[in-house]
Length: 125
Image (tube, rainbow, N blue to C red; front, top):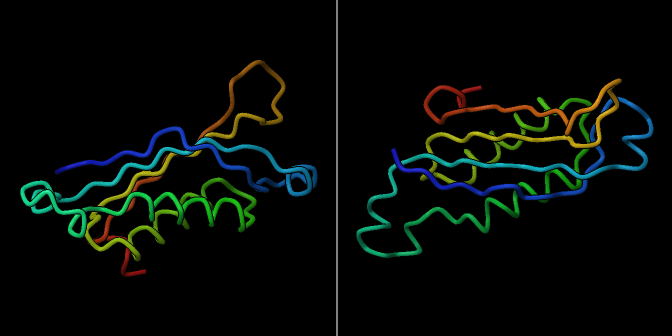
């Protein structure tokens, strides 16, 4: 299984259950891991057969910055599903989303959610 990663992409979005989160927004740090068989693209050195990770990034950016979710889990699921729908050579996608500005009584760098979905099992829904 081959992997491509987009690491620590920072987006500004309006996700959370509290009114302040929906009104003021905050940054989200996102990692995207794409898995599949990328051998043909590599052997031929052919961009047309590779994963368009610029397109993956733009898909993530659009969803994170334009949609609003209460839960990071819902945002992660939407990202997984859209990437699998749009990028046919990706078999498995793992999304992790870190919310650094979280309201918890304690010292921490944030909270995060990680979700993995794959074409064979999860696109049927």
